[in-house]
Image (cartoon, rainbow, N blue to C red):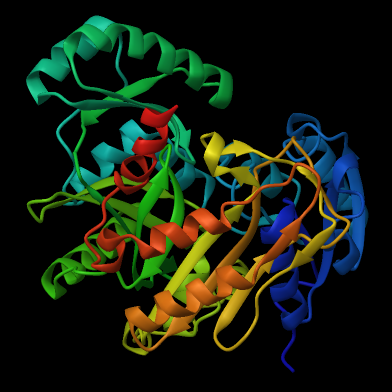
Length: 458
């Protein structure tokens, strides 16, 4: 066995992604350090990791966002590198700079790149200069409600207000008429200030009945950039993804090639390093526009790993250590179809309200070509402090019909129970059964359409 790229990696995250990273490290022969909050003392990754360090109480601000505690844990345990997973500090350029200042390798893009692309308004400008199509809208952050109103009249309604520092489906507001824009501006700005610590907003045209398609890229420190195909992420609730698949259904070869080429061009233009995702909106008329660039591993990376047979997390780690990419573009030939369903501890009948509790039964599905990424187990307490993601079920099959059938079977096998615990597994089965999804003609409005009768009934 060759020498591992690092001797020890600290995982600055929790839940299923922390366990996913720890497993990749173990396969590479790397020792792992898990950090944990008081609420996660008995978590799966704490049990799995070689060492674990308590970094604070349950609230994320006091633990998983506590940079001094994380850096101190890395230094105390002899970690050489930090993997941030997704969420929390994964796209924080200040955290990346602090890691570097303390002699730690941040497994992700350079701070400068994250700073540029994390500012969505700046990213729009940079990508437009690189030749990527962007929706009509702001060329920078909005200065006032009056400026937003003037721009909205120029762009044409509906428009969407977005937080410059936003992400994860938060900090957005669709505005369909001029009378609603000023109030939406103030509310979205307040939300952005509270969630991201940055109240700046930008505006762009909102596309009705759109599809959400993203392209996975991977880049090394030697200037090599490859793409690993695209994923359709159109099944969403409140701008947050529920079902993802690769390849995107009913996407013409010409558009697929154009979007992938655009993502590679955009990544090269800014000197991207590591794993990233270029997210596009596809209009009913067959046009595509860049929405944003994510400087991290995506929740839905398993579907890309299924169709390419390629370990993205392993490559993130080796690239961060300075190694060149282990594959060329010609090596990345997608095969078959993969689907991923996010099973959340939420009650779909109560507008997806979180439904925490202690698991008295947790039996995930199995069988051929079924992958379950989860940190849950019988006896685990799902708390109210963190994201409600319970498990990711990803399946592969030679074609889309078989993939849907396999996912239906897998979701039906799930056994989750506990006082007050509800999950989205049953609802996800309804999504897969919907005629629009079956035909590959669904858009980001599918879930709202499905829930409309329930709203009327109530």
